[in-house]
Image 1 (cartoon, rainbow, N blue to C red):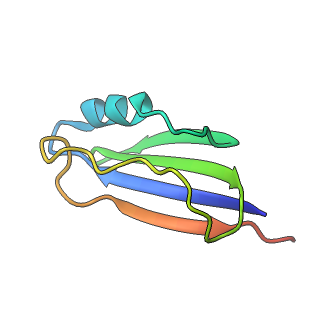
Image 2 (tube, rainbow, N blue to C red):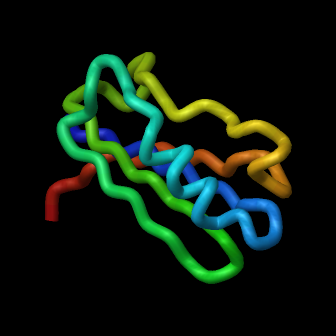
Length: 84
């Protein structure tokens, strides 16, 4: 089964580049099958990781950034792939 973990954070005003660098610098052990990082207006950063694991598997996730980087708690979602 393929599981996708989504991690989304909103940086403090003007801190989007710092948050992006912070997220890109965090390594996961073990590494996911695939990892993509996105940015959006309002200093938002999104990281999606894909895993070959059961939906409820204990998987490594990006931690909460420091309060100096984000204006709210990180949002996290977990999805499982479905056949078309």
